[in-house]
Image (cartoon, rainbow, N blue to C red; front, side, top):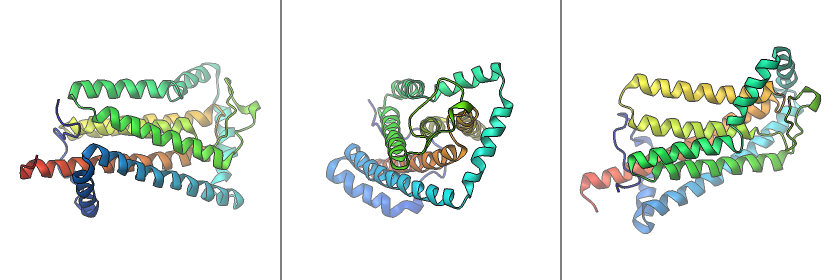
Length: 259
């Protein structure tokens, strides 16, 4: 079995030269505890920053609400969603949003990670997906407990109803992170720019549609979705950056002929 962080074919110019201090930090950690434990430690540190960012986002949200800023879009967005509804569309959107739910999304992401791991004979895809999902779950639970925002009035929601706190949207946050990691793993092995661009477009469309489906169904306010997008992108950036640091370090070791 090859190293779990083997790079394989990947796009040119992806070596994070701007992150040289972090690369040196990874080198020290990897020599001390091995690359796998170093990765886990850095992800834990990154997860701490992500959770802190969740709390900060909650504070920003509170200030926004007080000043009638971005939250002023919530009620108009909900009214626009209600105006678009029809029985057939309601059913279709409900089926789609279930894909990003606490059952559907982990199953799809886990299956995709297992397939990629078996195909590449590497545990990296599965490990990255697990870590990404864990961080996303922590941010979702942390945000909901910290803010405790009520969902839109039930008379505007399409069943099945949900009763957990509204902020942030867990469906949107998880979809952003897991779809982003999956797209990243695909791009690593795609040789053509057109294919990479198509992969990114499909992932973005899926994430945007998942977030808007939550507003359409009346299960979340628009600001719940917007913050979930920003938190998801922030955690995705942590996961991808750490992976880039590790494979860059290991790639340099191979180049030097180090064991």
